[in-house]
Length: 117
Image (tube, rainbow, N blue to C red; front, side):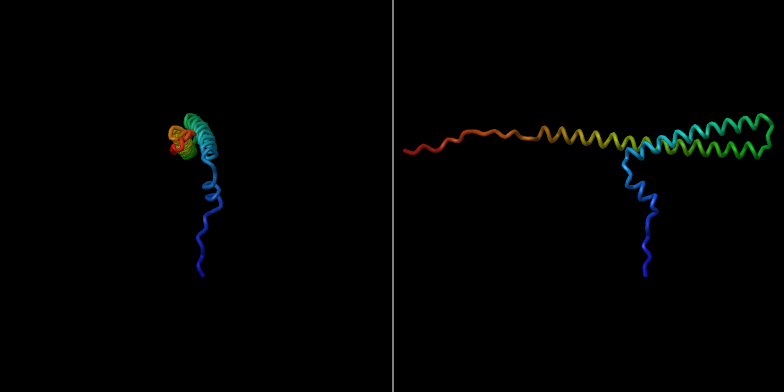
């Protein structure tokens, strides 16, 4: 009996999600992570200057840098999604214009019958 490899439900959900939703979610979550990471970095800096134990502020600072970098990566992915959306719009408009130009106008002309003598 062969076991089928199934994708996790989250992967299927993301694959079927429209680009606009992916863009919105990744941009929003990315900016939230950047803001959160900078807040934690500020707290780590405060702990360092108040002579807290080295390990405490070092780990908090490392955690904050991980949050900031993951937020920037997500925001970068959002920019990629946005460019894909814009390219699709541009290609759609170009094809629409091309079809408009190539459309032939049908005209009805009177065909004279051959003269019989």
